[in-house]
Image 1 (cartoon, rainbow, N blue to C red):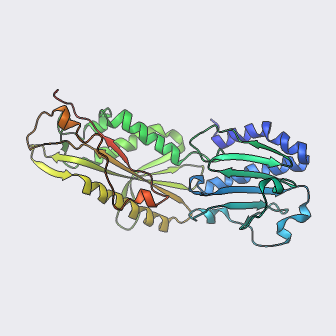
Image 2: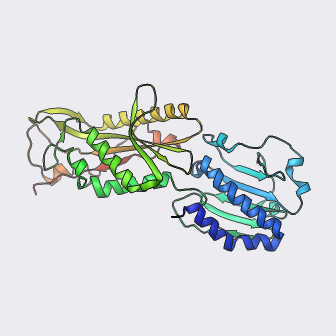
Image 3: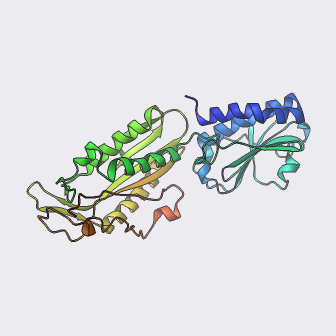
Length: 351
């Protein structure tokens, strides 16, 4: 199966290449193919979601002698150095020597640049090519992706986690996760259910993400702390995704006595813990783009007492729509931290 960048490249060959050829001849064709190659390579090293402004890649074709290279000679750009930089606008020129150079300032409009160059422009997922007096947008085959030249990575995991909630957690459909419950009514968790939850999500992600990603449970991110799950693309880019799992509710031992009560403070603890993991992982893998995903398995029930064997709908569903307030809230201040995924597991109610 072809990847999204491969599909969009084929599409552009049929639609955008003729535009460049009509304006600049064979030089335009060579330029647009080189730009597409650079775009795909760029998004292997830099996550398009984290670019706050525009990306411009251009190659002069009508007057190579006017290349800005002759005005400001410098070292070619190593794209791997961009991995964890904060980037607003990114302007890249493919020089006469076919090397890539970063331009920090641009006072020209896209139309002015296109007068003697093929130009690629991406702002917030809207991509286009310009050549001479013509311009043409890139079709969006994947609406969730901020670039059609990037292999969907973070969005693939987001979609998988959303499916996991609806297909596996809400009704406790997953056989592995079902073993987390002490009782058939799904009122109390067993003592220390973490390993079953982790195994459930690991198995789901391995099945869902198939052969494109490696999924490892309990991965050490610093000298002593393991994150619950680490996900990494096998061949396509430099992304690392860390998943931390916490559960809320009450757990009991086999004889029914309560062993733990976890509510909002536990959720806050997990949020801060994942933020620390992300910092540690970035220090140990500076050339990788690291993203954090916080999964909260919510099994809270109202008015529970030790020995409860049945629960009303009012008590069982009391926390279903009660979102958790985080303070601090890492997902609101960090670009490497997804909005937490709270997954409410419903009980079997008596009414």
